[in-house]
Image (cartoon, rainbow, N blue to C red):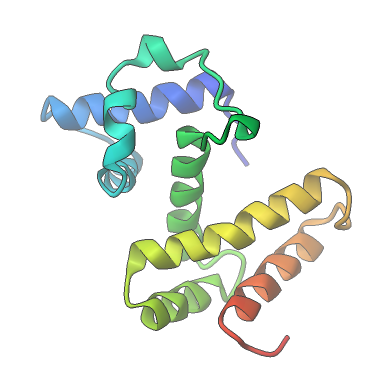
Length: 149
């Protein structure tokens, strides 16, 4: 599992956006990232100024959403769906999309689960093994769909 630094994540999204705006070739992952960025025009101007955002904080306490965390969660969901990991996640994400009738809205719904599971794992309220974390995540998605555990 890759563990990029905060700066590397920010540079990745800014570089992907810069390449898109300049019609330059991009890697497959950068193209997926650009798709996420295109769904969030409110982040586009920010991403165009890499020097301004590298060290900037986006405190939740100030009512700000961290655009890099948000875009990273979008990217994570795309990857999860593409490889069906954890097993069954692709089917659940597709079911959310069908239920909501909108892929982006479904991603935001799934992000609620992803964010909750990450938060719980960081605070130690989930066992420290991936199978338990994956199980909790899948169960959260099922609950969002109104499915029985």
